[in-house]
Image 1 (cartoon, rainbow, N blue to C red):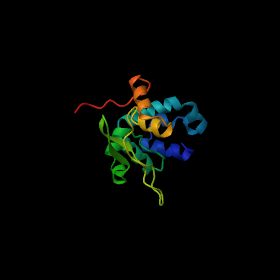
Image 2 (image 1 turned 60 degrees about the vertical axis):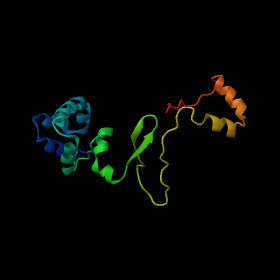
Image 3 (image 1 turned 180 degrees about the vertical axis):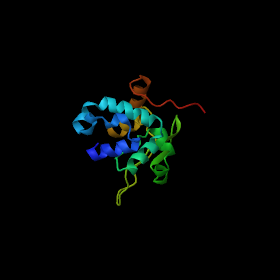
Length: 156
């Protein structure tokens, strides 16, 4: 709570329960000292409502509040869908995946790079050849000895 006014608005949103009217809860220091008890009472109230319902009720009274999202919530959030926040891509060998996109949009920023993560060892040959200057015969010997690895490609 930012202030005693926020506390009062929270109490009103809860329906002015008797427990919230206790004298020790009327000051910030008293509420801080009793935060575990207050959390228990608030947990009972929030468990009975959907997260967005809690958020909307509190915000309607001027109490800062937001629903806590986990990935399942994000997948169904119409605002995130409308903003194109969720990005879908193919991740071999796992298949189709969804990831969070850019947190904000701004002019003159390039689009974020979106591609599957490389497989373990996928770029071993390129890195060793182009950056380390190893010849193909040297690379073959290192792979054969198990020093380097390449992804195992599924048989077609």
